[in-house]
Length: 165
Image (cartoon, rainbow, N blue to C red; front, side, top):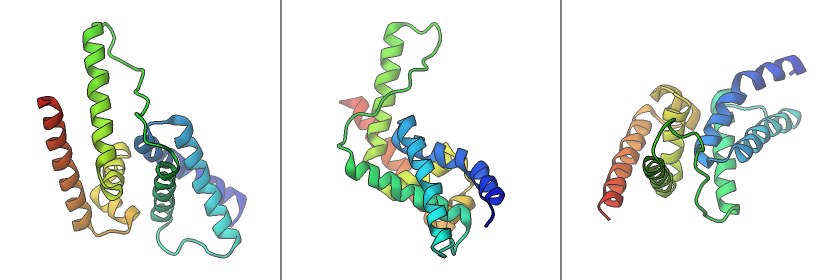
């Protein structure tokens, strides 16, 4: 594969891979590292004669998913940094409430299975269709729908419980 083709692949998929990793890790530097590593692994696979056998997009997101999982295995669980962009002219109480709510959602998402987290990241952070998510994860459309439904139902229940505590 020539360098121009590799550049086009990088330009096409890097933003999606980065958003996926950012959604999963909530850390811009970590997301950038993961996205870069995905493309290094692609180069290694191509040089070793092990080109992706499935769709390229599915292969890239599969590698990204594994790298995110590796990141969480290596990194102790700690609260994720919250976004600093808050509503303009919001009262300090409203800002504090928004930060707490975001923290609760992030904590609840981390409690989901890795498969559920991956499906939600692809569907909502990257805007993938159910079919695209199935392709990227190597699962059937029915499995993706089921994972998404269970994940959202579980999140809803956990967030209701958190509100009532």
